[in-house]
Image (cartoon, rainbow, N blue to C red; front, side, top):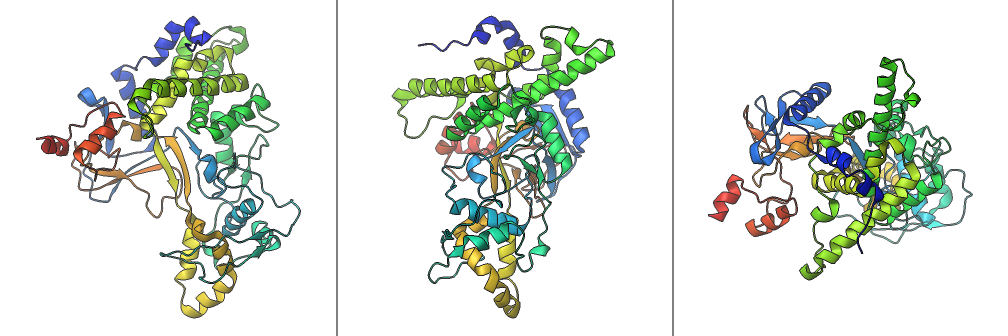
Length: 483
């Protein structure tokens, strides 16, 4: 049975206009302005023949030198990671305190909120009644800080709550200060921030439509919760797509209000969609390379080639279900094109082809490593307090913030099996920005490339993986190995 989306049928020409790749001059202008705004000196995005766009050096870079940092357009923390890491929902810096990070993680695990069942970030649980649960998770670590090798050390809930609520201070934790927690402007218990500016920026860019709090501007908070639950249970790439659609709707509204203001007419006096304004609002998304998600997603290892058509059909149906839930939650008649299955599929496909892992190192790991490196007398004294918490955390003590995001500049970087750069977080990189570092000296005018895959694989394995991205690699290494 064929999936039928009424918006696709009714608005096929307008949808085609949205999906039509922008002209090279428009693309060039967009990235020139973006690079200038972000002060990414030394690089330029240019057309690169059959490969489309590429990032090129406009100065010489030394080995291990920072080439650029790229702010994400949209990003999400994996729902399963939210139990381990309390981070800013906009810039993804760790927030609160070392004590809150540890206490919160142990508390949520103790009351049974584990990685498999956790849907979204919960509110602070300091007001919950104390109980007699014990935290008894115990592992030993071969590297860095380690838990004791004896029997499990139980932690009463009172000790966990005291840590989480700031009533207990761990030794030397003041050497790892974190920003205070700022609540969501909409009053939800799912988003937290490192500053008021991050809270406002997130609200204005997308969250006001996606917030589940009392001040949410969504059509239906109940429907929104259903959409979020479906995404958490199936694929959190839907959350990223929802952010992209919300981002575009809000940009459209601002552009229309500004346009009407210039003409001294209220925006409400003009009915219907202004396609030119929607195209402008859509521009940051239009720049990314796209294919339908169900066409470009890699075939799972346990799916036989003879079942590929069925698999891709099921992926399309999954996207359609997600779209219907999102449409009920945040539909905007003037932006109805964004709720077509064709547009939704291409947005998700863009993330499938261009996403970069979002990773931020945990200060909790740094804290325990610091304790482990103290001189003996200080270390022994500190561990009288810290060791039970490390034992309770086990190997989870070092868990970092993990998610996925779309980075405009990074998405322009082409692949090479012998790349001259890599995405790599340095010690000082403590937020969600993508950081691109030179692997070797790069000359002025040379294209900056990264590897999309593990370049240590064999030629055949590399080409098979890259086929999922829709191309066959012709880098110098592959040409040499093919010969």
